[in-house]
Structures are given as structure tokens and as C-alpha cells.
Length: 219
Image 1 (cartoon, rainbow, N blue to C red):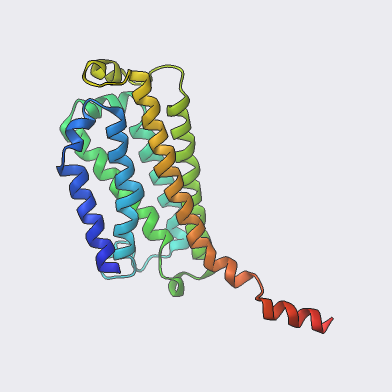
Image 2 (cartoon, rainbow, N blue to C red):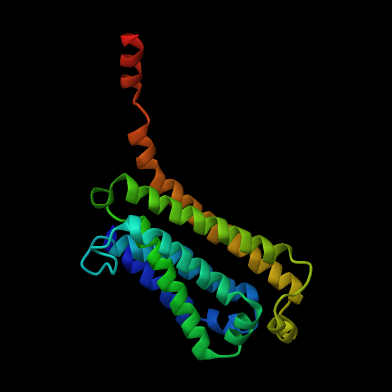
């Protein structure tokens, strides 16, 4: 399963970065957002699942309880920073900046998912709880940013106006659809990940049916 996840993650990155999507992203905010979400919310968890706990894990030997929150804050700065109007407009006009942006998205996504998916035996309850918090915090800020983009009453990026003639949608429609992609993929992916990581903690904390019956009998 780990090898399969790693292979799928690498294949997805190749499709996102080498296929037709980068060219489409030059004229479409929605296509750019598909690239972003594909990297951080789909490829990153697949790669993290394949790497976590192995010798290739860049966080191996570090305490997830200490790494999770800085990783989540790092991703928050990366995501919101690159979506600031000036930064995003610059990326759309520069190949080197696009490479830097996509590389930082992958690094931030991997940091968050590796911290959250660390092996149970190595992290304990504190580390697992930190991983849950890390994923849920990321889900919240991606949901907020996606909502802001989807509901904004005006175009936030100059590049959308420049590219309007090359798309079937108006600049505002393109921006709104990109926000919906972030909501639907980014927010949901991290939320599901947080709930999945939380499940073992809940099973440990909640008494089983047999234990509950024993407690009732003891009364």
C-alpha cells in the first residue's frame, strides 16, 4: 500500500506539472487552483503515506507533537502568501516564480501530512492530537480562503483581467470557481484527514460496550 501510494503521488505530480495544466493555468485562475489543490490536498497525502516512518521520511526522528503546529503555520503562510494579489500576479507572469510557488506548496503539504500521519507507536496521544489539530487548522484556513475567493464581489487579481479574453468565463466567474475548487478539495481533504487521524484517539478514549456493561453491573 505504501509503494502504491508513493507511486500514485509521483504520477499525479507528473500529470499536474508536466501535462497541459501549467499552460492552462497561465490564462485560468481555476486551472491554477486545480494545480494547487492537486499538490497539497491529493499528491502530498499520498506521498506522505508512502514516506512516513521510512528512512526517506524527512521528519523521521522528530517529535510530531513539536513539528505539527509549525508545519501548519508554515502552510498557512505559504498558501495565503502566494494568494496575495501581488504575489499571485507575479507568479502568473514568471516561470521561475511558478516553480518556486509549486515547490513551496509541495514542501508545506508534505510537512503537514507527515506530521499528522506519523506512526501511532512513535507519537502517543499528544503527537496524534497535535496531528489532528494540524490538519483541522489547515482545513479551516483553506475553507476561509476558498470562501473569500468564491464570494468576493470584485476581481482581486489583475492577471484575471488580462487573461479574460482567453477564457470562456468572466474574470469574476473564474475567480469564484477557483475558490469553489479550494473549498471542495482543500478544505474537505484536510477535514477528512483530521477526522481519520482522530478516530484512533476516540476509540481509545471511549469505553467499549462490554466495559460499559461491566460498569453498569458494578453499580
